[in-house]
Image (tube, rainbow, N blue to C red; front, side, top):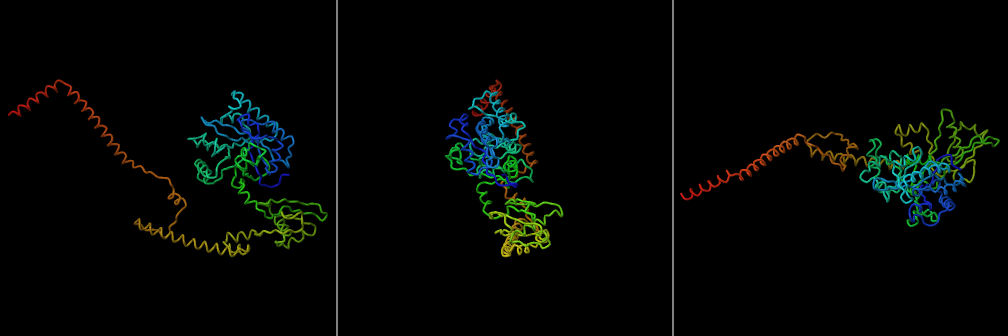
Length: 495
């Protein structure tokens, strides 16, 4: 049964069936069966998955799975396919994951897809679509566009030289990226930031995912055909439905975790699971289920928030109740269950440190800077003292650095250094930036331009002079003059 609160759902949205062999030669290893698929996914604890064959939909596999689908125990199967998308002379791969999990809708999508390929007279192995064609085939369908990036058949190859277009398109499509190595993610983030206004930059909030791309269900959870090791799953936070994907792609930092990240946050720890409040006749007045993560109690004044918190205090042995609520024990019976309790009990023990903070405490601790009181309340005075001493040490180091900077600055420039030097973050980023600023001296350039014009004019005069000299040399007058000149020189020599 689906929980009433968000839980971490293991997902795998890229699994092939043997129908992919119809599109690409030797694209599947072993034999495929829906029965094996279901067993493998349940063994691995996968909650949401998709069958994504190349440019084709395995209608029979979807129908068989849905015929015996149990929504409480079986993983949710969403319609998907992996398309070859043509961009110029390049082709890249992208998954389309639709908000459909019923036979009728899948048959409808499949018909439109096959009609398009028939219209283009494309054989199975020639099937490709452009992005415009995809939007034409599925104009009003709700789907996620998840392209490959960073490896083979990458969207980067398809948009080589025009990566800005790809970035814009992905932003508009609300697209996560698949198959992006960790070292490449910062590159993608910085490129996306170029199209965002300053307040929205450096958020590191783009969705990256890894799926198995399984081509051999008998060896699941192997990657591809089993020759690349086992797949490291990704988890998304929410319920077992399509909307959970949407929320995860919008808020990946808090709703998407890799296997390593999930292991860290899923360490075994105790938490309250259920609280039952019954009348003296053992009929349940109210039953509350709590999330192992964050729980928020919302209500107006006198709606019972404080009363509920006091009931919890009465059921947990580490906490102290408020005597003004003693009357509730007269007509009610309280039962609680923690993660480590086998069943409901009257009082439970939670082995983690619990901090009780009311509204007055918050004002005292933070608005009036009484953090020492918080340290006393949480029995962390030692850590508080260490942190305070470390802060003082770092403050002295910073002041020394500022004084040294003032000294160097005053030696380099003959100006009065202010007593208080403030270095802003944007100034530091500017000084450490690898970018260069070029200043253009317009008057100087204009003078150079005038000289070039003068030289150009002189050049034309010289060319004209040489041309005239050449004509002069070829004339009879030049030959006669030259003869007379030689004769004159000879007469002078004889004299």
